[in-house]
Length: 331
Image (cartoon, rainbow, N blue to C red):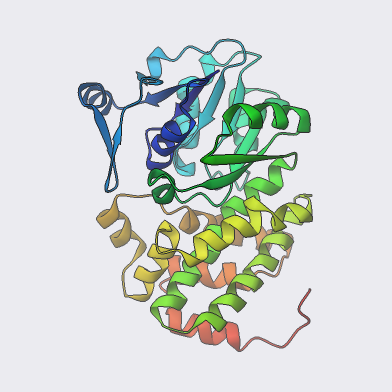
C-alpha cells in the first residue's frame, strides 16, 4: 500500500515515520522546493528536538510529482487554515478510487468540518473520506512510545480494512463510522486545552482543571450532537481520549499557548516565537460564532474566545465562569 502524506508538518512527518513499514510505502509530499531539496540531501529529518533517520520505505516528493493510483491513500496533515489552498494543489490528481484520510483538525472559515471542505473542494464522494483522530502527541510518538487513534469512514467495513493496513505495534488503530463526531471531538478539545494551560499557569489546582475538562466535555457533546454526531463517539479515543491528552500534557501546543496567554503573551507573539498554528485559537472563534447562531450554551468556548481574540483578562474570565447561575449538571 502507498500512503501519500500531504504536509511535511510536525504531524505529517511524525505520521510518515510511524506508518512506513515493510508493507507500506510512504510518500511525504512537499510544497516548498527548498525544504524538499534539503530533505533529499540529508540522512535524517529534524522535527522539534528530534533527529529522525530517513527510512528506505519513505520517499520525499514534490506535490507536482504526486501520482495517485488505484486504492492509494492520500492522508492530509496540514494546518486547517491552509487546507483549502493545499487541496487546490492536488484536486486534479484525485481519481475515483482515491481514499482520502484527514489528519488535520479544525473547521474551514465558513464553519464547515474539514471533511465537508474536502468533499466540496475535490468533488469526491463522502464515502471516500475518512478521519484519523485520537490522543496523539507527536513528541511521544517520535520517542517510540505507543499511541492509539480512531480511523472513521462512513462505511465501517472500509474503516476496518484501512485500520488493518495502517495499524502497527506502536500505532494501534481502532475503527469507527462517525466521521463528523470524530472531527468535532478532535477540533473542540483544543479550545478546552487552552483553558487548561491558563488554569495551570494560574495554579488553580487539579480540582479546577478536572471540573473544567468535565464541563468542556459537555460543550463538545452539545456542539457535536447539534451536527447529528453520535454521542458515544465523544466518550472514545477521538473525544475524551484526545481531550485528556491535550489538556493535561505540557507537550500539547494548545496547552502551551494557554499557559503563555496567562503569562501575558498574545496570540501573535506566541505564533511568532514558536512558528506554529494554534488550532484552538482558530476553532474558538468559529465554534463561538456557530454556537451563537445555533443558540447553544457554550460558556467555556465563549470565554476562551474573549481571552484570545478580545484581550479579556483570564482572571476575570475565570471569575465570570465561576459566578454563573447554578444549573443542573447535564443540561
